[in-house]
Amino acid sequence: MNVSSTTNTMFRPEKTVNNSPEENSNISFAGKKTGHAKTVRVYIKDSFIQTHQSLINPAITNKTTLHSFEIGGRTYSSFCGEGTDEYIMSLFQDKDDDISFVVKEQDDIECEYHPPDPWGKRFVQWISQGASYCTTCEDVKGQLSSCHQFEHFLHCGVKKFSFKNVITCYNDAIVTDVKTVQPFSYLNLSDTFTREWIHSMTYIGSGFCIGKFGTGGPIAIQTVENSLLHWSNKDCESPRSITLRTGLLYAGSNFGTFT
Image 1 (spheres, one colour):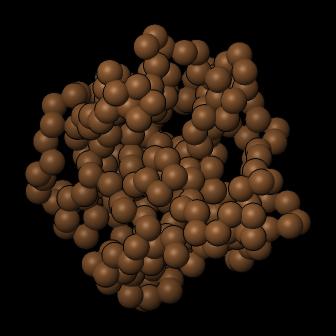
Image 2: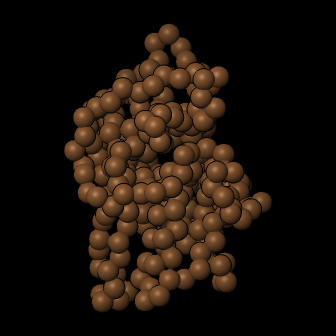
C-alpha cells in the first residue's frame, strides 16, 4: 500500500462506519457483546517519520515511518507501555469492554478489526497498566521487556520472562503477500541468511501491524511494508535481506501464564 511521509499529528475525531460482517468481509473477529459492554476504538491515522541516530554507528541515521492513532478522542504517536496510563485506563470502565482497530482504506471505506478476546484483554492491560506486572525469571532481574516478550504476553499470556531461555515460534511460514495473513496473527522478521530473529509484531489487518520497538521501547503502529524497510536498513550502511514469517507461538511449561 502507498504510505505518505507527510507529518501530521492533529486530527478531528471521526465516526466509524458500523458495517456488519455481512456488509464488509474485511471486518474480522467480532467480539462477544453484552448489554453494558462497549468497544473502545483505535483509529489509525496518517503517517509521520521518526528519526534517531544509530547507537552502533553514530554516522547512520535511522528513519522509521509510523502511524499516529486516536483513542478516546486523543491523538498519540505511540503507547508508552511501561507505566500506568490513567486516561487510557479510564476508557475501560467495565471488564467486558473491548478494543478494536479502525483503518480507513481507499474510497474512505473504514474497516474495523476486533482482536480475539484474550489478545484484546491482554493488550488493554498492558497499555493501561504498564508492563510492571510482568516479571523476569531469576536469570536477569530488572530487565525491561522486549518486542518478542510483548508478543508472547499477547498471544500466550506469558508474564514471566526468561532471558537465557528465549521462547520461540514454531510452524512458521514465509509470507510473500501480507493479504494472505489473517488479522491478529503473529509475525516475525528474521535475517534471510542467518535466520537471526530480528523483530516480532502482530498483524492488525489492511496492511498494518503493531509491535514494541526494542527493549523498554514504545508500542507503535506501522505498515508491514514500512516495518520491513525499517529493520532491513536499521544500523546498516547497506540494506540487509529480511524475511517475513508468520506462525504460532509456544510458551513452554517453564513460564508463568495467565488467562
